[in-house]
Length: 136
Ligand code: HEM
Image (cartoon, rainbow, N blue to C red; front, side):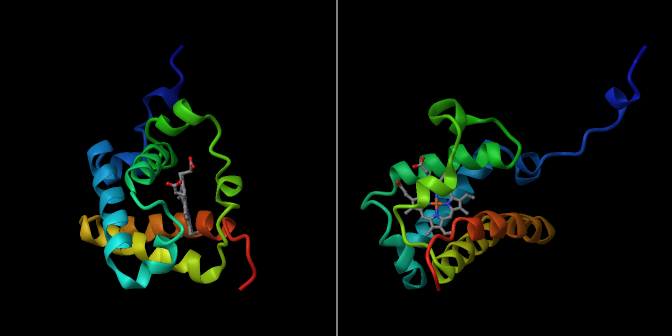
């Protein structure tokens, strides 16, 4: 017997709504370009290595899975342990907010539709807020 759930139309994942791997890469590249260029983000830029190539790859791999697409990050590194991996950096509300502003700006620049940007920003907020490890 056929399970009716098998025939129900699947809701698209956020990964599909963004437009797949090429568009996630575009978003990550714009995010780190802005972080590199804009004085507003100098605080979080200073926490990163001089060259951002490795950071770009890791965030791209991570976001593909986080958005419901392929698990490139987990395949390479195992469980993300994202909070633990951020413990070497002092992250308080100003750093969280810089990260989120940089991502909001990048999402706008690459032309994601406004309702999708809003939905993703809410999810990014929850993850970024959970990364705070410092008072203030
Ligand atoms: C809250 C503010 C945040 C700050 C200040 C911050 C800062 C950083 C820094 C300095 C690194 C190290 C980069 C490197 O080693 O190349 C890093 C790595 C990373 N961040 Fe963040 N981050 C923040 C939020 C987030 C959020 C919200 C996400 C995901 C949605 C994220 C995902 C990652 C990933 C996947 C890595 C690579 C981890 C690894 O394998 O080493 N970060 N972050």
